[in-house]
Image 1 (cartoon, helix red, strand yellow):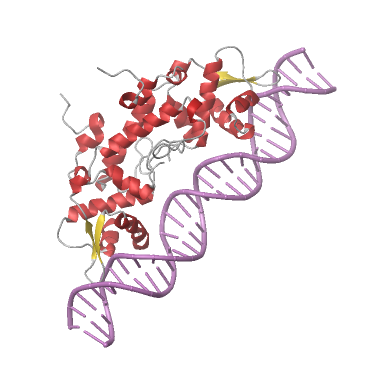
Image 2 (cartoon, rainbow over the protein chains, first blue to last red):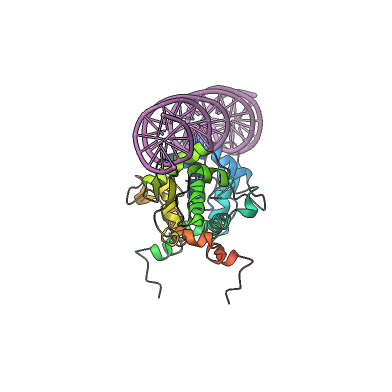
Length: 151
Length: 151
DNA sequence: CATATTCCTACCAAGAGAGTAGGATTTGTC
DNA sequence: GACAAATCCTACTCTCTTGGTAGGAATATG
């Protein structure tokens, strides 16, 4: 598995906040309750999102969190990348140039690099908005049985 | 990360055996040496491949392992699936129908399902032969800088 | 019989994943 | 100003997975 609960919950939070829209700040306890997740654990995850500039926060009474931008301006890739640190399918694929010392002669490296690109490409192509509008066609592509046929 | 050393080493072993071709059985110690990997650890990995019917083995002196089929008849997907158990990017995607109890109302599930399909699709499209022949075009697609332009 | 090999079971150390605990700080309301 | 509701911050813990290691039994060749 490549995405842990951290990334999954982070995405869930973002979706929740996107649904709540612009009407004020939503408190951590509200989010935890509506998603039935541990408040303390969510707290640590939201902290990552917040420090990464994904959210706006307001302390004190009636405080909480809201999205910093429009849902269509968040790709799933950036949300998961921030929370997970890396989305590479193997640890011989590192960020930006750093590579295993056998890279030059490794015959399986192109496979891993290709897989990495396929994943990145998919996740960059989907936005928060796609999720809240339930754009199954975009997410499931040809595998969507309830979508209109492509032609 | 989704693929551990177990799956990576397994693939390396398969590639190594594919390169050695049909000329007899290759011993574990030869493989370990040529790939510079721990013999004992490789042993446990080869055991999985062997039990899964990917290899033919011969015990005793001059024994060893060879591929059970032609390299073009192995997809990367089946090799990794056998050794890793699952290739699902999240653990709310399980094999064949088993699902999380929130699945019915989960708005992020289509995303994970789509990601899973994209990965599976990619890995099913590449064979052992593609790796030993260095078919970069197939593995890297549009990201292959040394390939001919698609036209 | 000696040797080279696969096969099998058990064990172990380090790190990651999934949270918990407790409190300090900030802000709105009475 | 007191209180309550909220974010912020640091540290801890427990369990499972990863990445191996160890030792020996079974088997085949010469």
